[in-house]
Image (cartoon, rainbow, N blue to C red; front, side, top):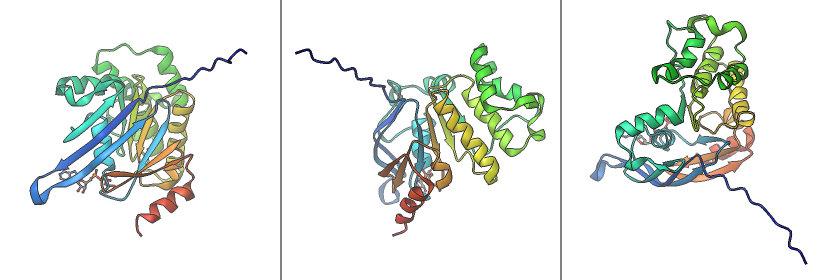
Amino acid sequence: MNATPTTTTITAPAARAVAAVKRYGSGDAAVYALDGVTVALPTGRFTAVMGPSGSGKSTLMHCLAGLDRLTSGQIYIGDVELGTASDKQLTLLRREKLGFVFQSFNLLPTLSAGENITLPLDLAGRTPDQDWLRTVVDTVDLGDRLKHRPAELSGGQQQRVAVARALAARPEVVFADEPTGNLDSRSAAEVLRLLRTMVTDLGQTLVMVTHDPSAAAYADEVLFLGDGRLVDRLEQPTRDAVLARMQRFGD
Ligand SMILES: Nc1ncnc2c1ncn2[C@@H]1O[C@H](COP(=O)(O)OP(=O)(O)OP(=O)(O)O)[C@@H](O)[C@H]1O
């Protein structure tokens, strides 16, 4: 009898934390912002991070993104372990492998939208991959607004420019910290649809910290932090399921 051959595709996680501990202060004043978090962020997926205020969301994101160092444990971006990297290597890694979107759009006011998008590449002396850049600009759908300065764009449009800037270098992971925190609900939905598209259509890996259950519902999975620990996770989240889980933190 012939056995049917099976193939299994194993995709390495884009980033992971292993027994991640981050302690601020010492002795009686010690605060464990992360208290032993082990989690893998799969490639090509949209992961949202939620939890009550002070639960360690920003700390986890900053440590994953090489903006802050752990007290103990390991962070990997691909197969690079960040703990052994020098500050200079971390700066290079952030520039070459990671993209960032912040709550405040952080665009340079004197540059056009198009110039803002390519600025990180220009500063790094890298030649943009024109095909990729065209795909990114098409995806963010700014049409004829590329020559406009940030002040001439709506909040939602400015955040779409910031998303395009994060994508321009084709990073391995994009980190978004409350990307819709400064937007009205219509603009927020515009930006969230764009983030969803960049994962679904362009295969980007995205990690987003948010307080908003509606925003988290765009993700493939939501991780819930409580007191510096990973306390729950929810696949294919809906707004109501996320809301219900968040309400349980109040119990
Ligand atoms: N630089 C710091 N020095 C001392 N304690 C800190 C520092 N940064 C964070 N913390 C503490 O670590 C814990 C986790 O903070 P963190 O900002 O990661 O939480 P968060 O879930 O992102 O909160 P929020 O939703 O309010 O932004 C909190 O108790 C916070 O007070």
